[in-house]
Each structure stands twice: as structure tokens, then as C-alpha cells.
Image (cartoon, rainbow, N blue to C red; front, side, top):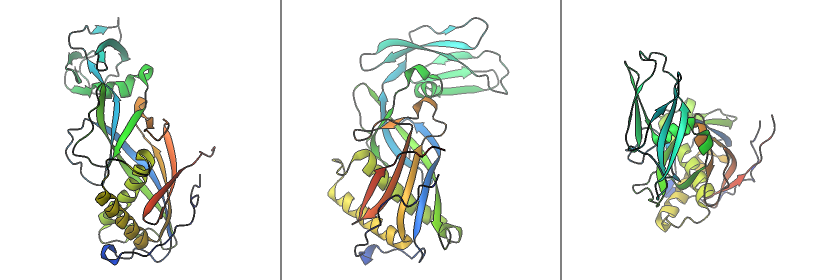
Length: 288
């Protein structure tokens, strides 16, 4: 599917030379961005390595009921676990069919619950899943979208009564369309280029999920980001970039939404920079 060139031509305002970057190519570039890995974390994760992009998302609050009863199905790995949902901690349950790890020495694991985790002891190995991991893998009757409330790192993930805040970490792959090839293939420090590309992707997702004027973003932050976008655009002769946002391996937690975006398992975005601001248009999917 060719989604290049969907956006309007990029405007080219004057660049503040204080923020100028080394020239990457003299030929125009366009990018195709895809997600190669996506994982959910509790928000106590400390500064992930590399250029992983983080999104703070909320989901309805859920905990294991440690006072409830764990029940096994007859002659199977079917397991029923007690849950507490929402701020009211209403009682619920989930029944899952466990999958035995290839190297397990026990045919059926012993089970230990805490409010947020389940430990499955398979004899020679222990499998630990958070309550959200379990729902992500097995909760097909509890499918709800993850609501994006912040894009990028944040020292204070939002706390909302009745909801859990999780961090969604995504790793991207950028395919560069340029007559001179991908400058990352010959750069002395390709990590710098990857960092620049992550900034462009992050800016587009902020605009898409948080709207045109996010209330919690200061004027100073917006101005600094605008200057960086112009510098990165000019250094790369970037005309347009497309983001194909889907979450591989996230099971029943694949849907994303926000206050500005309808829930979907896949979001196809055409992006370009104009006057230091990223412009984002949601595109329909082409069959095949």
C-alpha cells in the first residue's frame, strides 16, 4: 500500500539558525513509519532505554480479588479468577485457558494472587502476569480501548478515580524515501537521526491524540518544539511522513482512542510541517 504523498506540500518558513542541524540530504525525503513493538507497563517504569516513545493511557481500574475463590476446570488448564472492578470494586471474574510453557515441569501450576499480579508456578519456572497482562492476553469479553491522555514522557501520570494509568511503550521503524537513500545508513551516529525521527513522530501523535492546543503543554514547551520541528524538517528536507499506528502483540488491548480520536485498532496518519506546527490528517485504509 503506497501512502506516500498524501499530505499537502510543506510550507517553508525561515529557519531560526540558532536551532539549525547538520544537513542530512539535499534531496527531499518522505517517511513511512510503522510500529514494530508495543508493550504496556505500570507507570513506575524508570526512563526506558533507547528511543522508545511513551504514551500514558487510562483503562478501567481492575484488581484481583485476593479474598475471592480461584477455581480450576476439571481435567483442563481452564482457570477462573476473581476480579474487582472500578472505584466501587464491584465483584467480577474472568475464566481463561492457560497455555503451558514449553519447558514447564508441572502440568498444572500453583497460583498465587496479589491485587495487581498473578504468579503461576510451573515447577521449574514461574510465570508472572499483571492483571492487565492477563486481560490483554485472555480478556476477549472485556475488550475496551486504551484512552491516550498524554504523549511522551511525563513525571506525573494522571490519576483518575476508577481508572488505571498505564504506560504504552512503542518502538518504530522508519522507511525513508529519498533519491540519496537513507542518511541513517551512512551516518557516523545513526542514534542522533533516530532521535530526531522520534521527535517528529511524537509531535504528530501529540497533535492527533491531544488536539491542536493541549491545555497541559506550556507556551515554552510549544515554542521549543516548534523550533525543533523546523530544524529537523530543514535538515532532512522532509516533505511528508505517514504513520501507520497499530499495536502488534497487544492482544485485546489493541484499540486506542482519546478525547479527540475515535477508538480503532489502527490509525493511519498523513503528516507534514507548516509554520513550525505539525499538521495531521487521518486517512482511510486502502483494501489489499
